[in-house]
Length: 235
Image (cartoon, rainbow, N blue to C red; front, side, top):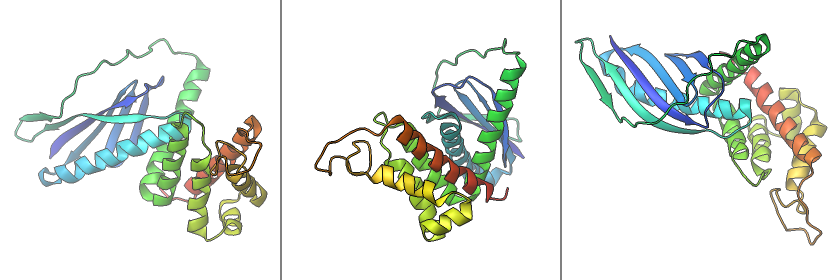
């Protein structure tokens, strides 16, 4: 059996250390360094490499969702330790890693770290199984990285659910989300007077940016859809 390590650079850096298990990998994330380790037969390397890339991107989307920020991913190296004792390293890129904060001892911070790790691991594992959840998280990542705060991606989360469950009423029933809340997400994001909505400037006027309350409503409802879809995926 060969041992493989796939290393990625993730930005921005994270303030807590994660240790996850996303089969077939043991995953470690510290600051800007994401490492996936696995043991496999000789002929499985190409498949394992594809799995590592997919899971790394799943984790980046999970971080984007859990921490409400955009994350970028870059392959750093692929390291194989062969049964023969030989080693092989490819695609090496050098970069600086910020040192870990070893002084974080407060109980409240430890609890926060454990809770964040649990959320990231849970969502990362579930989206590997559920392509609809993965699409929802892709849309959320688009929203989190949009400097103009456009609401279109949040409405796209709803549309994934509507396509999956065949209508908004069925979404409300299947995901235990208030139908009025779903309608609020649709109404706000489709308002033609809202400049950061889906149809900016189509209203004759006046035009405006969505209020803080409206933005929070759209975020809350989109999160409820994602969270409840995740709970329906068995892992």
